[in-house]
Image (tube, rainbow, N blue to C red; front, side):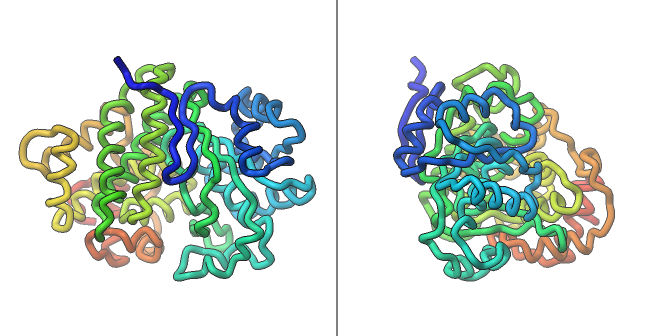
Length: 388
């Protein structure tokens, strides 16, 4: 007998999980004291039935659907203008990671007087914010990848510098998450695969990040196991509600776990996405094996635990590495960045920006800008020898 699909969780925040739970959107708004929400979503979901249904559930809800696939500061400014013009008092963020990030940042900035970049995830810059001005957020994920619905930050591109910046504040965590697998049923197999492996990368990098955080480690391991089991099912049959629900859980688990840290995969993926406008999850999925090879001296002992969790036989490093390659191939993930339109241009700029990315601090092997540039060149070429 399979486990029930509906559940209520309160870690890391309040999560209402299960099919059909989008109907509880009015209750979620009421719980947070939101009476005039602004629904924030991306351009592709503007006319989607799920968005129209959400607007109908909470009368008086405004709509801002101007979020790009990789949000830029202008999207935040436009969303803030809509928020203030409509006299809104909270945000319903609906969509994938981009829409969820933008919705959280709009809610965060709604009561701030300082500019956006003053709250970048650097040192303790978050303390500059007026916490009383942070509006509440209901998050409704429609993909199972980023886990942004349980994150305390949002990624926004600075168009002047072409850099992805992480805006952080502890109170950016959504107050209620509605994790309804029925909203992910229409996700095409390729997007299901890319976002699903993004969740795997979150779990993998978090588990390999240095430091003692057994809560994050346990969540990361179970997240990887769920993805191993359920991602192929979700790709093969988009209507498999059990698989869809488990993948939503795994995505939230990945973002919960990476409070411990991320690593070189994300450090490279952020500047690649900013410069070449690539899909974040797909970029992570492509880069992962190159970073595994690079980090081998620092992660071999950790991979032994991952191998046991995934029930892989043989020498642990080889078993995990070979499984990652086979898993990607089975899900039709390209092997190189060139295959997703990334040229071998400006590797030194990518390497420099990767070395400065906040995610780089969690990489288990200290890595400088030239090494990041070599990793980027190898990933573009599809050369796992990492010769650059």
